Amino acid sequence: MTSGRLVERKQQQARRRIVQAAAELFADRGFDSVSVSDIAERAEVGRTTFFRHFGDKQEVVFAHERELLAGLDADAIHAPPGGGRTATDALLALQPFVLRLCALIASDPDEYRSHHRLIEANAELQARSAAKAQLIAHRLRALLVEQGWESDVATFAGHVAVACFASARDTCGDAPEALPEAARTAFAQALSLGAPSGQ
Image 1 (cartoon, helix red, strand yellow):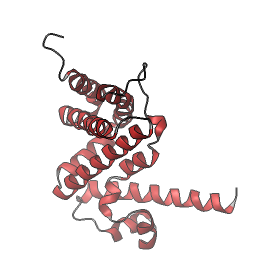
Image 2: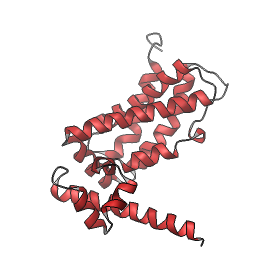
Image 3: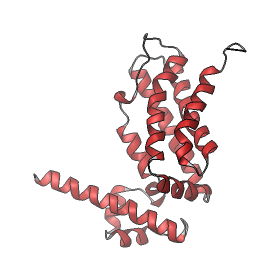
Image 4: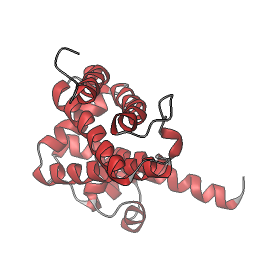
């Protein structure tokens, strides 16, 4: 293993320890009672190492969202057959990605519940969560534009896809196993908007 890969692996391990330490401390003490120094000490890293990975303790709460954003590329978007470029086509292209995300979240219900409760108990984290959702919507928009959708259509679809996820999350509450089906329902409702009555 080259020295560069070894350094990268050690950095990844330190990052995982920070995330795990923060989750444990937040669960034990609550978000407001935990400092960056507390997290660094539990993770057995220095404060400098902490800030190499995270700008503040709020960012640690959203480590998984950050990884999601970093991993979002054109392969996440699957255009429906037929090559249409309407808002409906764009939303259909984004739906499989959101459903995969929901299935991934539902695969670790304990982590989801602790994350959900932590955010619900803190107004600052709720605001940060909303900002993260906007970043994901903007990233989805950019990916659609890269694949040929008009900017206004891509913007609309990106925000609606994120709204479908938020609706599903709010619907299932503390029951993440219901998240994938709730997301399918939300997309079905969004895709039916504007359809004539009775269809």
